Length: 107
Image 1 (cartoon, rainbow, N blue to C red):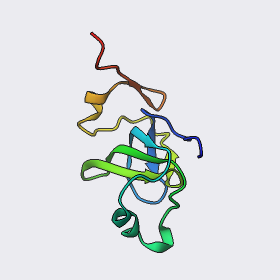
Image 2 (cartoon, rainbow, N blue to C red):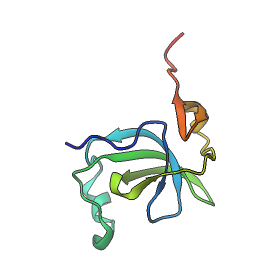
Image 3 (cartoon, rainbow, N blue to C red):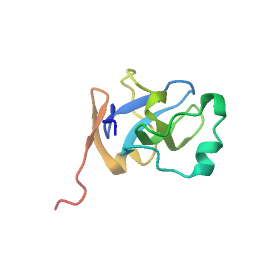
Image 4 (cartoon, rainbow, N blue to C red):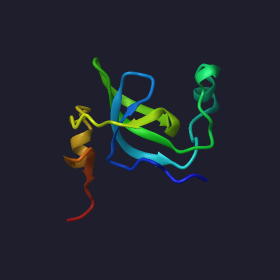
């Protein structure tokens, strides 16, 4: 099993498609449905044996959640915040390309 290259709270962008987001969870390897994986065109379908990341994502039009293989992510060096409405519910301040993870369970 490969160690994850990116961390929870890190702002990343897709290598091919025009979207970016903040990572809120990591699967050590593919953990979605076979139907989802097969829906990706074969010529660009990523391997299952790598970390996959759950993102609060955005493009120029909408905010949504995305599930992306490690091979398709790059560090987003724009320094810009992610405008997904759930970011403020999950994370604190953005510092150096990483949102601070907030412990919402503490009193």
